[in-house]
Length: 152
Length: 152
Length: 84
Length: 84
Image (tube, rainbow over all chains, first blue to last red; front, top):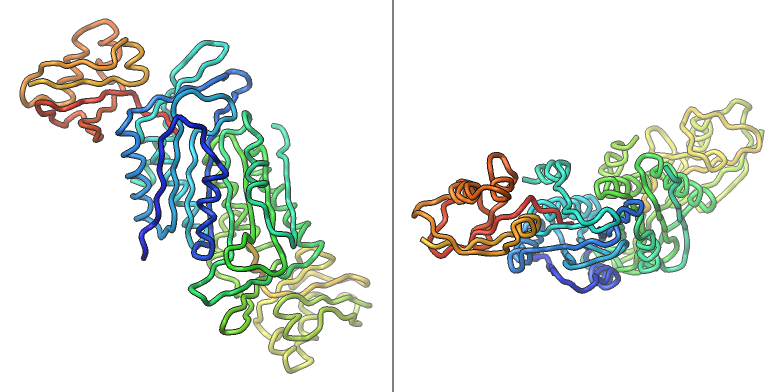
């Protein structure tokens, strides 16, 4: 099997969904299945105005790249993309983009889902929300830890 | 819960991935998670040049719309998109686009995956591949039937 | 009673027919009609006899072999679907 | 031996410190260092005492409470991650 192409990035710049989608779809005739996930800042019915994402520079990039490579060893994938934004964001902004291409949809869904679960629990990133109630660090969810356990 | 917005379509016109993606992401602050699946014509190492998709006009549109509505009752979704192309296509062309938006990624992954599984086994659509070996109708795969069974 | 038959995909192509109207006894089921088609012999028998994989829709609604057809119904017969 | 400590997110903000250098005994583990921080009392105790949820990385590699630190290492302490 050929090695999968990986594209991972941690950036303060707004994520370009179309560019990510184009890169995944460019793999035209080889892959049959593309799955892309976008995570957006939720307004939570007015409770959230902005969101700030802190990271551990250097380590965050490296762990994200390692997770993408790890997922590419678990399923036969052609391309793996994982972009994460850091810094200050508004409601509706894209926080994270994860996408994979594979020959069949089951593998593509599993791989994208796995990469998100691992990313959520292993990449040193922290969310703080700002709203009318002031600012607050987001608490880790047990559900995310359980989701990640499936793949460990 | 509000009713999900549905956008389903069977068309001979090439599918516009960006327009689908834009529609899903336009749901900005309400949804936190967007999952989009694209199915493309695979080249199969030169075995496939073109693909022809036949459908049962009228019934195909209706069943696709019903499946989208069904999936929207199973998970709390904001938007459900399901576009399927029919007619003649080349390697790398998009055959099908399925996308959903939800508050959380697990629901979005499950819903998109479910909609694809049901679509593959219930919408009256048939693939014929054309290549150097001549033309051949694609056989239904047991694996697709098993995948659909999970949701029935 | 009269029933419209539609054929799709491999069936349509192998039979060289995409639709026809047949006369069938009142109370016929999808299975009865498929059997009567198989009895035509040749390619019809090949496609519709015994344990052949045939899907059916009556008036654009998925049906089973046991579904009854009514006068004026449209019965579509097709191989397992392969879209997506 | 000397260890660089880094604090992130809620820890950094609550402590008002993002890094410091500490002296610690040879053979210290991550748990030993966290205990020594808790012993400072006040907000330090609140964040680091007992069963507090603390993640640790040594030289940018995830570590456990039992991991040993070496002279010159950088030990980062942070709450459970919440990206994605």
